[in-house]
Image 1 (cartoon, rainbow, N blue to C red):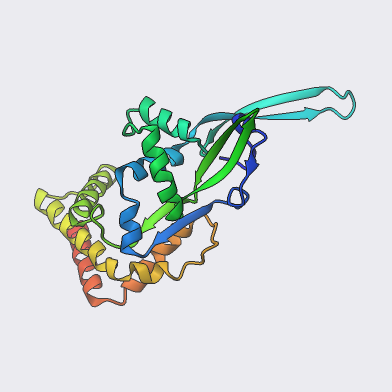
Image 2: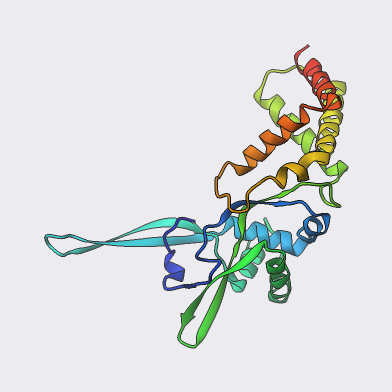
Amino acid sequence: MTGETPDTIVGIKLSADGKKQQKQAVFFTELEEATAIEHPVRLTILQILSKGIPDSVTTKVVDPVTYVSTATTKPVQRSVLSVNEIVKVSQDSDEFTDLTRNQVNHHLPIMMKLKIVHKYGIVINGKRKTQYYRRTAKQYVVTMATPYYDEKWLERRESERMERTLRAFDLELSDKDKADLAYLLTKSELLKDKWRAKIANLARGDVTDPNITDMYHWLLDAYAMGSQEYLDIHQKIRDILFR
């Protein structure tokens, strides 16, 4: 969403958090917090807020000579949603698990306590007041293994990533090569789990640079180079890919 106010929420009274620029990333370095966001309802709410809904922004320009007013409208994706909108998106799209209003109302306060969602502002229409919510950050980075991001999840992710790579690059690999690569890549990720929180704790809390997660992964890789075990794993990966 741009800095312009979408037409649907024109006149919104922003909260203190709503006036702040949205963070690019939040790093979870405590297992309890990281596990808490993995509740299915909370994950769905985060995904819906990330995707947003179609809206528009209308800009009016007055000609200084003729004083004729011209309005132009452009489509935008609004990532600031009300409870009713979150529920509607979940029920209208096959992409998400259906949510009820009670579920959203129950989990939003928990998510605000975890500081992954905040109240963005209120739109007042007569006696009706509608609260809108926003993710505190565009990305959330889990820096340790959890019941969701476990070894099996890593193996599946690395296998899928490898298949995408093979479709894009001319590399001849046998089924055994693929299995060995998936194992080594997973082992590499598990090894880096030891250092993720250390690097994440170096991040400044007010960073809004869109490349913050790329910087985090680069620093993590640089730190990992100090481990002989890590270097040995990646030498084996190189040998399989380019022998």
